[in-house]
Amino acid sequence: MSAEAIELRKARQRFAALGGAEWLLSSNGAETFVEARNGLDTVVVTHFDKAATPEEIDFFANAPHMIGLLLRLVDRAIKAANQSSGGRATPVQGKSVNYAAEAAMKCGEAAFLVFLEQCHGLERPLTDDKAAQKLRSLLRITSRKELNNDAAAAERWRSLRAAYEAWRKAGN
Image 1 (cartoon, rainbow, N blue to C red):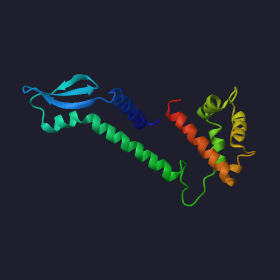
Image 2 (cartoon, rainbow, N blue to C red; image 1 turned 30 degrees about the vertical axis):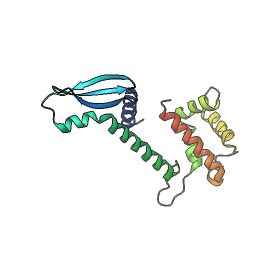
Image 3 (cartoon, rainbow, N blue to C red; image 1 turned 60 degrees about the vertical axis):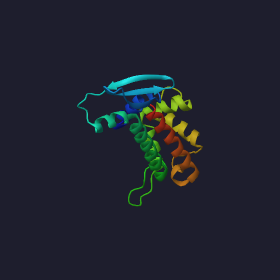
Image 4 (tube, rainbow, N blue to C red; image 1 turned 180 degrees about the horizontal axis):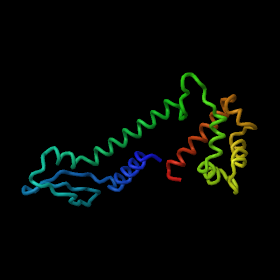
């Protein structure tokens, strides 16, 4: 997982930890502060120094709303990117994707072997050959070459690959 993906995950966790509380800019005449309201509970989150600018106060008071908006925009962008690419690599300069080679490489990845074990019952010891056999069974093919020639088999491979990527992104 990239450093940016880790930071994005942390941002999501921090945002979720707020529990959907509504942040309100408040004043009692003597000072300006932000309150978090969650149901009937209200908690003062922070008090502002008299030297704080209106822009700084506004930015801080609206931070949860802005973070929520940005996370929704990121989610929409990710979804749009996945839909436009069909969840697969885009061929370069008119060359077709070699799913057979891609599947062979995945069968050599330790994380993919663990995915097959945890999600599809691959038995130990985890070997490339056992992974290839499990892959052929899952995809209902007799040879990985079929992934390049059979559209339905290719779609099954893309679906399995997407499940694997989701499994990895979930921290497995």
